[in-house]
Length: 226
Image: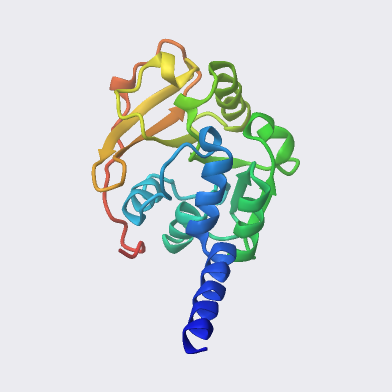
């Protein structure tokens, strides 16, 4: 009887974990849609911090694409982004519901990044886009459509922070748009697997060179906790 009771308690605990744990949710979504999730585990806090540190100050919206389990969302908030300023776009309904429960003060929209402009509130001014989408594993047409939405959404000098598990150097072909200029690129080896963070800005002068732009430093802002 004792063994039977212990077994039932353990079983009940595991069942609760599978329904409440963000990691368990990630595993379920990864099994169901591995290409859409595009990772083998949630982003580490180290990677999320490096992403958050690239977001510029301002009062315009910060749009996170592909919020997942909220690893990057949480660090963006920890680093001082006002919840009212943050908008998270997530295509997976289970992930979107989890995000809204976890971050009730943040606007979470369940939708596809290829329709970003339509999903955002009318007259919404966006300062930065943080993309957690696996662009390199998506069909080329879909990836190009997403980048076109970035272009339509951001003002000139608007910032895009993209991370990818494909750590090969970024080229114009992989960016999918000539108006985005790479300002910094760095591999985070501490993440599992290692990931590359690329920071770009929208610059509409086709003849402009990235060499004329000052690089964005990687560092720990004063108000961003480790």
